[in-house]
Amino acid sequence: MRSLISLALFTAATLPALAAPRIAHAQSKSTASQQAAAEALFSDGKRLMAAGSVNEACAKFAESQKLDPGAGTLVNLAACYEKAGKSASAWVTYVEAASEAERTGRKQWETQAKKKREELEPTLSRLTIVVPSAARVAGLRVERDGNSVNEGEWGVAVPMDPGAHVIRASADGREPWQTSVTIDAKKSASTIEVPPLVASTAHVDPKTATGTPPVDTNSPPPLDPKQNDDGSSLRTVSLVLGGVGVVGIGVGAVFGIMALGAKSDAKADCSSDFARCNQAGLGNLDSASSKATVSTISFIAGGTLLAGGVLFYVLAPKSHETTSAWKVTPRFGVNDHGASFGAGGTF
Image 1 (tube, rainbow, N blue to C red):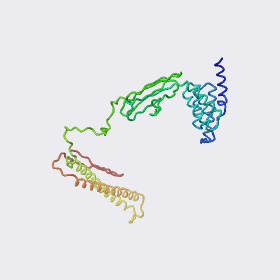
Image 2: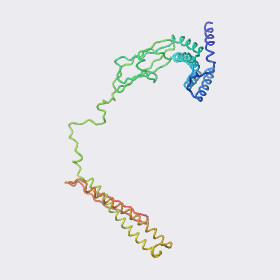
Image 3: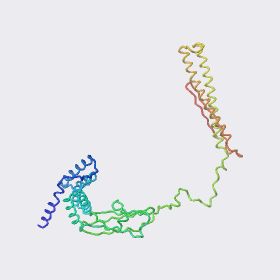
Image 4: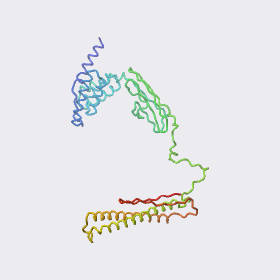
């Protein structure tokens, strides 16, 4: 009978806050669209709570609080956490709700939140993460359930929700360490001590991590490339360029002769000044113009390549010993549509 009376008193005390519509405080910086979305999420959260979908309801209240913070949302979110068995989350949310309600003058919510906070605090289970001095290496990172645990929290008994929690420690050049602990739903105290992290076998000394392989003092010193360069490579390039240049000039000469021939053929079908021509004369003139263009381009390209080949040959270092003999063979092809030229070499 006493439990039924207590439940009735709790319901009567919390019903006004839980049933009241969500009211954003006057100083809210949320936009109108954010407030509208927050209101819809809040209403959906209350519907889910009534339907018994507690976890889904808590997610709706939490999202509503993000969009448009308010004491009323916090009170409902804390009650949702409490119903879901997340005592620590409920307690800390009641603390926040009491502070927000006091700031905005919501006296009823402030009173209710403080009362629930005081009721929950003696029932909380706590977890202490101890990091001894021997384990405090440079760059040590401690995490609890994927969230960073700052040095100020080391050695502090922190309220935790019941269930499994993962503790992890890591540092550069050290093997990571991880363990898990299950927090009891009833009041309990657990302690996890982070051990000294073992040096990683894959760790590379920063002083030697330059990407340069170690020097073998027993090996002969590397030869200076300048001392080994007999100029053969540069002379080879010059010969290839010169050969291709000669081919280009030859192609230009051939197409020049062909252009002159086509223009000569057009004389019979055109006036003396080529101002008027029949169809055959126009065709010969077009052919002469195309061949003249190919001739000009070939002369320019061939001359440039030949000049480059001569320059490279002059700049190549002199060699006292010939290590290879190259034979450059120019090749070209000619047709009515254009020309192709190049060179091949053997040694």
